[in-house]
Image (cartoon, rainbow, N blue to C red; front, side, top):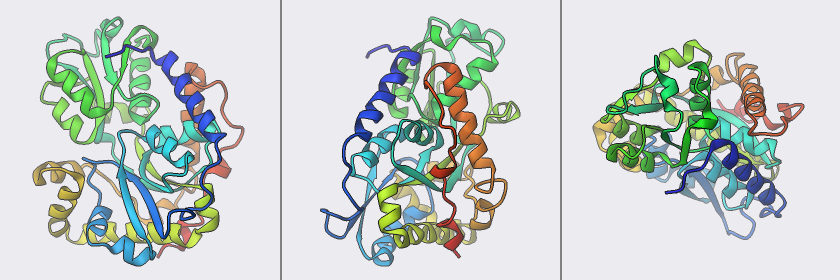
Length: 337
């Protein structure tokens, strides 16, 4: 287990993305792959479109074999997209998207996938003796978190609010399942994660700040649907089709969640009640909501700038883009019915 300070690892990750961006990605989504498309997603992250994955709806309606490939964090998704291995990322964290495009990754945000303030947090071990009142005692202690994603962003914002110097914690790069195991063993004072791993973490401690407390200081959490620029340019109809099928699945779930949940849980690799509990904390914005000022009509771009500027101030990114507008395109969602 290697201890890495956040300020040192983040530039290394960014450098990796820069190098990947210099590699010629596979031209076109399906060039060289036959009629196949690869979609990145997360296990233990129940979403209605997994039911359409299970019954072959995506394959049938998109006219291609749709391969769903699971990842441990959103930065891994970015790297796979830059390399040409993945064309669509479903529920990619906003932070990995921002980091990627800031460093030149040829990606485009085309949809807001899910809002989930309650499903991403940092849990302090019950034996650590750390609360908001003495949060500075985290300095010098081990903390597990994926780095350069939404979880990391939330952690840094939370520590900043509580007066903790993030550069003085021993930050361990761990994806949520690894962090949950480390917290269970008592190897770390705090672990940060999302999804099923977060549920496991909560058996061994309490949140440093609740989701409501975080939202009160302006920390928002949502994931996006991103696509490679080549795929969007060469197969815009398939981008629209993917978003339409996801919208359809979300609408069906609102009408009869109980019918879909067993399939969704199985596809997410979860027990039924775990999936039911988690998805109950998700919000899947509708097509009309996404096109409103509250989402892609304004707020998403504002938050993209906020995240980028935060990381610049924190020293993890050297410079933000002058304009993130070209990396966000709502024209595909406008074609969804």
